Length: 393
Image 1 (cartoon, one colour):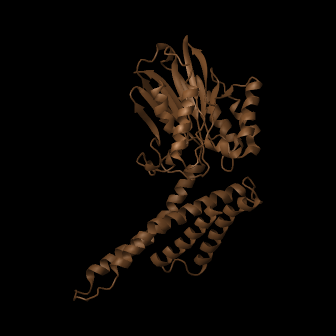
Image 2: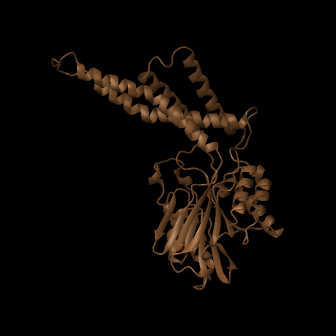
Image 3: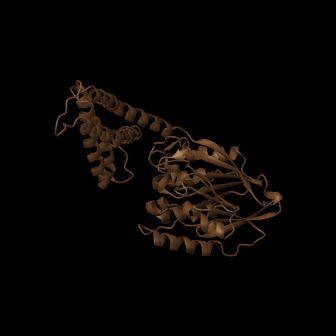
C-alpha cells in the first residue's frame, strides 16, 4: 500500500508540474485523458493488493500491466525533470525588491522563453523515454559473448564455455516459454556448463513449467543453480522441493546451497561453489556475517589442483570468493540497474559491483545485466543470456 500512496503522490505532482510548465496542455479532453490514464494505472497497481499478489486482471492483464509501468515511469520523469525547471523559471521571473531600470527586460524575456520551451519538452521527453524503455523491456534477450582470460588456466580448460542465466523472474511479465528459449539459446551455443544465478521465479503457479524448462538443459556438465532473494520471498520450501524433484528424477539441474559440485573436464578437476543469498533485512553487518559463514562452509574441502569457480546471486560475495581462490565468480541481482547511458549504469552508486567485469588480482567477477526482470523497463541494459569462454591469459 505504501508504493500505491507514493504513486498517487507522483501522479498528483506530475499534474501540478505540467500545469505550471504548459498551462494549456491539461485542458479539455486532454485533462480527461490524463485523469483516466492515472486512475487506470493506479487501479492496476491496487488490484494485486486487494486480490492477492499473483491475481490476474480480468481483462488484458499483460497489456494493462505494461501500460501501468510505462505511465508510472513517465509521470515520475515529469516530476524529477520538470520540478527543477519549474523552480528555475519561478526564480527567473521573481520580482526584484528594488526595481532597476532595464531596456524592456530583454534578458529576462529571453530566459523565460528558453525555459518555457524546455518545460514543454519535458512531457515529450518523458513519454519518449518511457516508450523506448518499455519497448526494450518487452523485447527478447540478447546472447552476449564474453571472453574471460585467466592467468595459469590449465590447458584442458582453455575454451571451456559457460552459459549463464540469472534474474529471470518468471511471473507477471516473463513466462516459462521465455525461459525455455533462454535454455535453448545456451544449448545452441553448445556450452559445457549452464548456470542459473538466482531470482528464477516470482509466481509459484508456474513452478512446474519453470523446472521443465530448466530440465531441457543439454550441456555436458548439466546446469548448476543458486538461490536469490526472490526465492526466499516467494516460497523457499516449494522451490527447494521442486529442485530436489528434478534431481531425484535424474534431471540435469542441481541446486547448490552453500555447497559445491565437482566434475572432470578433459582430465582436469573442476569445483563449482554455490552460495546462498544472505537474507539480512536492513542490516549490512548481518549480511557480511552471513556471507562469511557461507564462504567458510561452501569452500570447505577445495584443493589447489582444482579449477575453482563460484556462483552467487549477490555480487558483494566476490571478495570472499577471490580470497579463497575462485578463478571466476558469476553473479546477478543488480539487473545492471536496468538503465545505462553510454555503457555507464545510471544507478552506479546502488551497488559496488553493478554490471560487467571486475578484477581482484588474478580473480574475476562477471555481473550479468539479467535475463528477465520484474519491471519491463530497460534503457541501455538489454536482457541477456551470457556465454562466457575461458581462455588462458
